[in-house]
Length: 353
Ligand SMILES: [Zn+2]
Image (cartoon, rainbow, N blue to C red; front, side, top):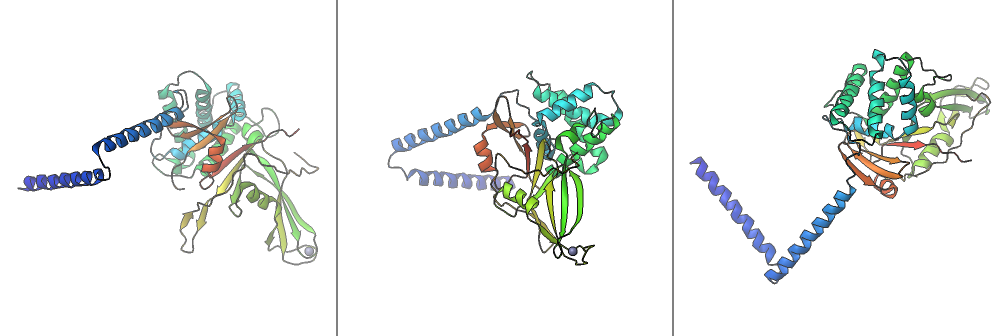
């Protein structure tokens, strides 16, 4: 009984489908016209499919599997792999170090970066197991980074740098002497916090702090203005002046040193009045180049899906790494399409003569 009923139901649905088909066909004056339209439609979808296929890169493109919500890991790694001189320095130092248990994360990262660089067909098995071992090693330090948990790509990126730095410490890498830690040499930079009394103008604090990224509140419509704001626009702050006793001062930051690779995090999260976090899709203009003034002093020393747009020097091209889907893109497209969604930007310093 039940079955019959179900069958009848299905049939009526089909009937409805056919009715709709007839309705669509009445839009055309003749069956010939309909056939011609279908032909054009087929051609169009075929050409866009071919266009899509063209954008898929060769089999050597470095695809990373998603083990379950691990897109943030893949996007962070692909971003770091584009810092080729950094990967090269790590690779060289690691070849000249004695293997230690504490350097698993570092070794997995370097082996993956080597696989990415090699033009040979990559062994998927070794790539997958290296990626799994890297995630496991990160989980040992921070259990949040376990597979199937959604995490923040920027947090993972910073974790990678910290864990690599930690591994380097076990291997005897140093801050200013050889063998110099590549994390420090490539990503770390110093900023000076200048606090000026609003009343008498005396400077109270000239503390120099070390960073590996800058978090930018999206208060302007372009990335360089947001960065300019952090550096140049003083913020009012309650701080008691040692000279005149007034409790109002201005705080501003200046670059003391610049890194080779600057990580900018666009702060796209806002806490609402109900204490929930919402993502901001504010479009911001992303500049392909940033001009940063560095005032060296006398003592100079989400939630969602993540993918990574990366550029390479030779050949000069842009790729979008979306886990296992790797497609060709252009700088123009990246700057235009990511203005409302870009979250982490990696800039490389260039010599200006
Ligand atoms: Zn004062």
